[in-house]
Image 1 (cartoon, helix red, strand yellow):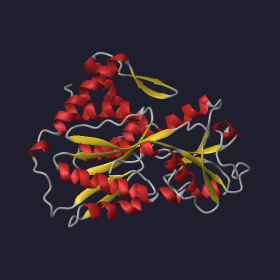
Image 2: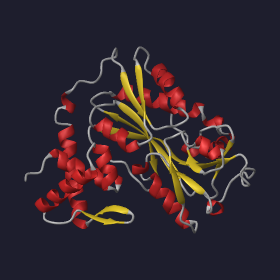
Image 3: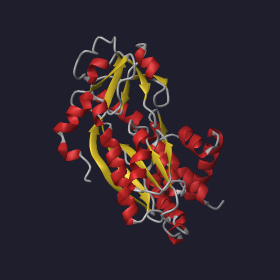
Image 4: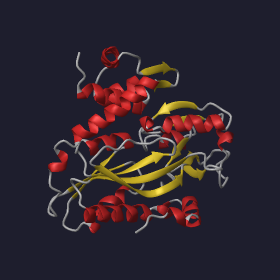
Length: 318
């Protein structure tokens, strides 16, 4: 068997999601088909690429080398003709992607103001990994990505990036009737007996980060529910579970959003764009629009507004 690009994408998908099952879902394959393909690839390269355990699929030493080389090959393949394409004309629309933040409602308007005459379309996606893939394949021109501290997102050429917010804390949402709802901030250890709603975009590392933070606080989280962004609000309001949230979200009816003591989880926001679709001036204009859109919603959560005011070093450079 000869290795093909689809085999390399499969290996990279497993490494990025940490799971054969999640990688199969991302690529539209069944789990048995993915496993069979992986075994054939391992036979070609002469060794096991992933060690399977309770925590998922971890690359072996050989796997790390194969994944590193596969990413180089895929980057070259993705840019084989992409770099030959002329940047978008001023009259063309711009295709944006954005993780599910409170500012998505303002992104279209603010970026449109920064690029007058350009039509802005928007794809909202809880997974930064999927947005990065869409950029690499030319399905998007630019995107705002949320990256959990300790979990990087692979960006392949001709995709460039610039940090928008270098760090902000992740907050927790719980029922307004919860015994801890009246506190200004909450210790993660005090939530050890709670049921948790799994974070969206788990393949980005958010679920692994939740487990790691809770273990550092002395307990294993009971991740009982799996709900897309926003869909977990009724569960939180009814007191069935708690969840981690973007701090700019205003509290939904029946809930409160509070900071966690010691900031056990943080995230950075990164703008990524295709250099073959946006020139330097247009990329700067999109950055300004995204930064303004985010800033518009800081005051939506008073607790985050106080944190923001106390940390001017994280404000975007406009």
